[in-house]
Length: 420
Length: 170
Image (cartoon, rainbow over all chains, first blue to last red):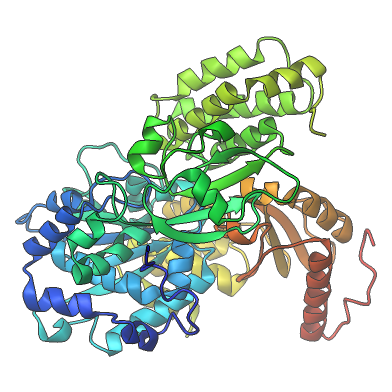
């Protein structure tokens, strides 16, 4: 029987308070690493757990930490990516609103491992409740000696600052986030150098997602083998899945990594009465859509990649048979077009062109050759941009054109939207 | 605390003053409601940074408003999850109820209506942010109740019963 750990305090009244977190064994992981482990041993522990980053890319967390140079002579920084702008995704908001101490303990253990004394939590400005609860939790943790100088009598000093974003999806891209933290427009940086070597203020910097950091205390307390024994060997652990859209019980579900997508949709109650599932977007709108016949895929990094999609942020959007896929594709590309930072021409100009064509098709003004034009534009955008924003848009549209081409054709031939 | 003191306190969190521009703009916007040129220049002066750095941030990020917005900024999410749950009809209803199109402000400057990209609350779609608060699982009836409540709140604040006053489009 799978036991949720990340969400265990979520429905507890006062789950955001230190007293609740401590009553459930909170801050024991921090005490344990400060008492028993060297920083290198914590890195090894996380490597052995095979924790892969929950922000979207799935890069091994311990390996990322091990890239931080030991003797650079510069301060090291830990940045928490709490910008959560991927449509379909709300897991980090709920973690921060309802159990912020879990994140703070994760930050403290991770900072100890990489040798950082300062962390910035880059949190989207819209998340006012999450910001307030996190501020309150930081103050509580300081007062109790879990943050500050000589934490729990050790030599470890650590401070957490909140940095509020101001509404730009691109800030979720780690190098754009660093630019934004430095007070610039959020545009991605060329890599290398990677942030672990030259990140915030050109200092060694580790950037981890909220959910990734929240996993760390549990790995310390329960051991890496516990973590590795959940889900598939190559991407193990408990996983938060955000389920929304046309489904009876939308919500946040903690289940093993690798659960089949159709089972996850069943957990969320399936489609509304009298409807059938048409398609599911498994990992936020950057993830290529999967048609109904492909729903036996495992919800983990490798299985979804093999199926031509991706786990991404695990923002699962369920679409039923009453919905027009041209409309869905148009809305997704409108999002990417709006959020393009403007740095790269293929993304900035290409998406503008794509949006105009899609809006025409949806409105019944599609022309012969439009679909070939869209195919050509996807080819021109994919792989030709600085960051993954353009790729996400192109992959999403390609999947819609591949799996639901007949709907696009029907719009053009009938000169109307068949769903309206 | 004055705005200057709040900004200086925020700036102490960073080794570089430039990093404090975003927090300073959020503080200034809370203080002034929006960010006209003189406020941007004041922020630059307090932080002793180039004015152009402040201008470029104020115009890049969507939460910063260089133009005034109404007392209540209604920000309806119409991204995919909210769209699938009926955000489009709610937008039409709001436009009719307020007598304005999205992007506009009511003549009494009480409401500004916008659509926004994902608010990160898809589990309670369709969602709208008003000030600091999220309102989820919206339908026509709950939107009407919310508008009435906001009008009453504004009436209490200004001493005028705006709920009783006929608004354009009603």
